[in-house]
Amino acid sequence: MKNWGEKLEEKIRMLPDSPGCYLMKNREGTIIYVGKAVNLKNRVRSYFRDTVHTPKVDAMIAHIDDFEILLCETNLEALILECNLIKLHKPYYNILLKDDKHYPYLKVDMRQPFPRLELCRKLEQDGARYFGPYIGAGAVRQVLEAVRDVFPLRTCRQALPPKTEKRPCVNYDIGRCLAPCAGKCTEEQYRTMMEGVLRFLNGDYESVIRSLRKDMEEAADAMRYEKAARIRDKIKDVEGMMERQIALRTDRSEQDLIAIAQDGLDAMIQILYIRGGRMIGGDHFALPREGGEKPGDVIASFMTQYYEAEALIPRNVLCQELPEGTAEQLEQWLRQKKGGAVTVATPQRGEKHELVLLAEKNAKDALEKRNARRTIREERTVGAAENLGKILGMDRFPRRIEGYDISNTQGEQSVAAMVVFIDGEPAKKEYRHFRIKTVEGANDFESLYETLSRRYAHAAKEAREGTADGKFTDLPDLILIDGGPQQLRFARQAILDQGLEPPAMFGLAEKREEIWLPEAQEPILLDHRTPELQLVQRVRDEAHRFGIIHHRTLRGKASIHSQLEDIPGIGPARRKALLKAFGSLKAIRQASREELLAVKGMNAAAADAVLNAGK
Image 1 (tube, rainbow, N blue to C red):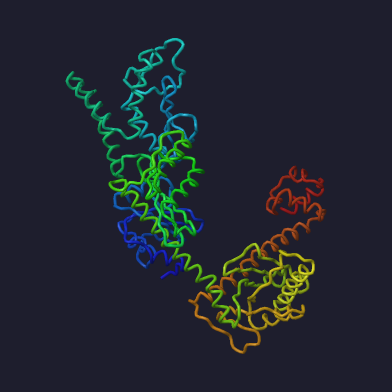
Image 2 (tube, rainbow, N blue to C red):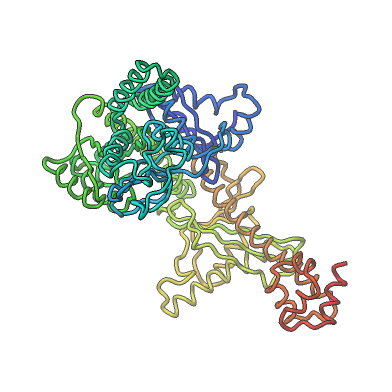
């Protein structure tokens, strides 16, 4: 069975017995798959265990690096959430229907004499009414078509009212426009129709259905059966939209659900987003040191910071708890920021209360996972470093650990890497490279001696100059040398020759991961499963990686320079100019004669020499 690492294994172990959705992520954090489950524990665990999968699932599993979950109360909610998350994130391994950009809105400006229903992708503080966001252009087109099927809205962009009456277009003839451009309706009649549009977009379908049924009955009584059939189809479309809204068990189309979980030390705020009557996802926010405060106070403080920076304030905010009188204050503040109606409530019963309980359930789950990750992190970092110090016989905690490695190719381009771990974690700003200057050939012993000599010489210089925060001022508590007793001896002697007492040091021999202490006759062998050895390996591997990357860069530059040096007439100045102009040897080879001549310092003979060398 594959080892997924402690972090992921802990998340797998803590999966809850709950319906919900899961989001699989790759190393870059990109969501590659979204799925739903009746039982998240059983479903998600199946991906990480040795079971038979289809080739597609096997390919997806090979790219998994992390996952997140969103808990739901029912399987239906998980289904709805899964659909919206797939539309939103378009994961590579999900079945995807072609769609357009995300988050379009519908806009109505009732200040206009004959307002239109417009599609837009940006919210503006312009006094207009906005509806949405709709997840995908397909969803907003569906709403537009439903509205236009029911209401005879104008779709043209003509400036109204017109200076002179015009002949109505075909939309008037087929009953899909009131033709205000031809004077067929008044502003008052059109506005009455638009008020029905606004009610429809706000989810009030019942009045629309009553009106349509009345029209259908009148058409049937007049034996206009084709018209009655068309109206019947419109009623079915509207009823279908009603069912999709009822599936979420809420009568509001735009809500934020806010809840909190606390453990006495820290707090976790969870927000679930409902847009267009559908849950589209959620976010959680860790609040350190807020675990002992009153939940309502924490939520209120969080809301003032969160909505200060948010572009879209929802129509409704449902909170788990708020201090007495705070809801009214927050409502007033949010209304001013939004420029429209906002309600803030703390429901105590009914469907809205159940939705808030769902947010609370997700908040508790997120807090438990955070605490588990923090415990694991402490065991693998600070705890591992402390235990390592005890194993090595140190009398103090090794706060700063430095690791050293030598990289070269057959003795050429030798580079030493110095990596730094502070409190058991990489401190990449402290990393340093050393170009080996005094050693010829592949001699790791002398190279380590030079590296440690220069490292401590730099520190001594900074101390003499009174530099408080120089590149080498902070000295290590513990040094790791990639190698056995011989490499360790040369590195330690380098510090002694500087007139200093070396810190705790050890060498790590790669074959059996043997830890060698100075003057020791036998190595220390640690269990491979212990955090202490895993910390040592991380330091060693990071030093190796850091050194190899820099060595490859130098080797590549040397290769380019050496090949350019072989071209007659291309000296250091022209070589530098060519590399600056084209960036690589490949680009220089592909350049035309005119492009080469355009480089500063190049002449016809030099350009021809470069072209001939590339043949």
